Length: 512
Image (cartoon, rainbow, N blue to C red; front, side):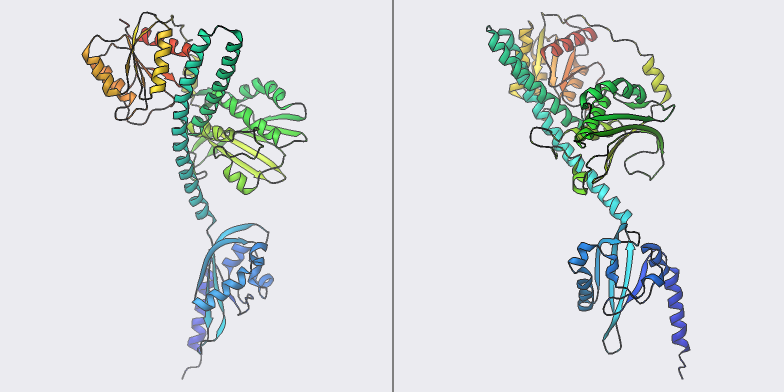
């Protein structure tokens, strides 16, 4: 005879099990969705005690938008119809904060199949979602960076040809009014080159001069420039921790990034206000931030009390060409440039913003090693170069006909004799057939045989032949090997920069 002891024992064990679970919210609903039970996990996750919540409708945990769309009722209908309902979405705690939840609802039926309620399990998977979003964002930025770097390379080639041709045209122009027109065109091309450098910065392919930088001295040295730039309506205040160590970055690029952030902060406060530039020493431990390696960092921040950004704007702020400014007032490349600089420096740009409360841009910069700081401080001054010899024969190599023609034009205007090749293979064949040139200048990004590979082949076969590698990329791909002794020439280059590269190549090598 069953006196109910067995059922009571099972019920007690079940209750002990449910109450022991604190990582999951497990509770029961009646057929209308009112809460009839509440476990400790639900109290920990949602913030309500059992006395506060039992008897209330479970739609309490949904946002106003979800309630307006009748999502709670539709969830119960789906569970009753299909035997199970599972979905992810935002849910609210008692204090109003929200979390990303995985929700499962199962119908409970009696022996005759009648619906007597629902069992509901809720998990907080906010950290998992954040990690997935971080991976997705990193993949998106990597893909955009590769596309941007390719575009910047093509633009560099075009600007190299345009600038070179304009410089020669100006030399040969007779009328002053024509020279003025050419000067305007040169300025336009140089502005295009600046935009290209910002694209390369986002793609982490700009050329940086990394070294120890004192952020206190840097900010102090450009405070007057920032004040003149933003105007009298906005006040700049500085809040720096004492005895900050030096950081490892490019000082010129950091100045540009900081000025860009200050201008953005000014634009967010059209009626004026205060911009606070602060810096503090922070220690990053493993797992604290997903892109920073453990170690010491200086967090340099720019804070305004302006309009702030909504979630969509904040998510797209570092995407190239995304801008909320009017036509002609912004390129959408400022924050991407800062993002790229931080990544290339081993740091991170973190943006925090709330609509109506303002924005804080944080530049997390790695602390420079003490040995590195001493080495940089004791570096010898740059040695002046003699002018490039004029009676040289130069082999120019480039797969882009426009750039090759431009390079030859600039060289010949300098008094050089030129030989042309449109590929690495053709250049090697040319070197094998006759007298060697005095210098080789080659592009890097060429099909089949890159310029870097051509440089290596020349170094093996003709060790004393000076080489110049022209490229818009700061860093060549991994696996290129040692290119010591090869002079680097950044694209787009002017005739003066080309002449200096020739002088450096002749000084480091042997011009015949």
